Length: 189
Image 1 (cartoon, rainbow, N blue to C red):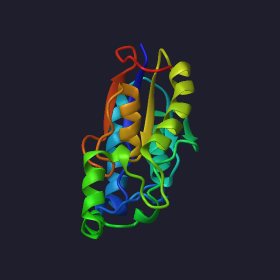
Image 2: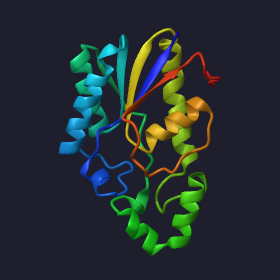
Image 3: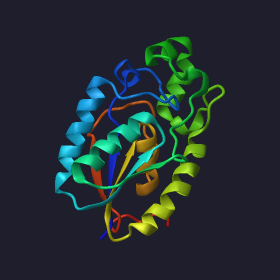
Image 4: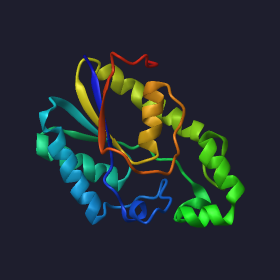
């Protein structure tokens, strides 16, 4: 039975400061380093076949910690990139809310309906997710593998796998990882 461990990258300074990181490539913060170590320890009990990392320094550094701890090869997926938030990248959430409360509220209620200025729509990210994940799901149909991604990309991956609506795209909270049984999902392959 196939299983995917969907893991969040350790935090960056932008995450801690509640800034929109999007497609900016940021290193792990000190807190993110600790989260990556915790994640690697948490996953010791799983018989992993592979560890994959989304594009970006934080995702790769987190995946490498897992790979080193469990002696599993790590592969980065350069086409699996986080959403580009264009002109919003670098802004604190409260700044965006203050600058444009109507758009912020719409984004909060329906993230798929808002295109950040010079950025990209959620549907464009979902298309990249589908293209990147279909081969992985076929390859690891009867195995357990880890996929490390930053938010909101991790949340969009989960939405695609479980066929659920997109969640608030900027929140980087919740558990560091979750285990999803691929056989239990009615997933598009």
